[in-house]
Length: 133
Image (cartoon, rainbow, N blue to C red):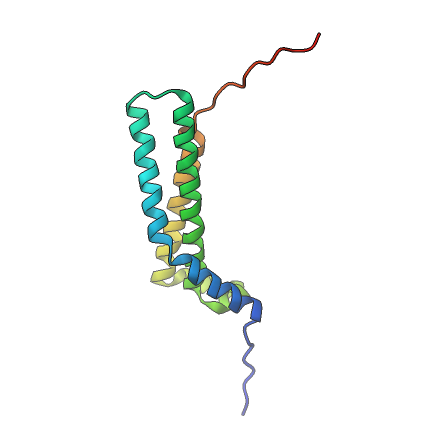
């Protein structure tokens, strides 16, 4: 008796392997984000100029975004190759201990990034230009 077993699409396999490769760099990217945060906090403690604080805040945002993308890739890879095509498999993947771990990690990184975007990046006034009369 033959059972119908839906095969995983080729696109899902390619995306799964790409996510596995991206997720390998998560630790390094998280370390870079921590270093960028330390640099931002040091600039804030030293009462640096607005331009320096903005540069440090933007660098921290970019580092957090890279770490977040790697964490999201690790999360998708943890759910399994079938989860790329099936929403129920994604839901079941989140229910596993490893899936729940990556889901909370992604949530924490998103919260940090949004907090930095709201309060960590200094807004500078636009330079005033001479208007034509």
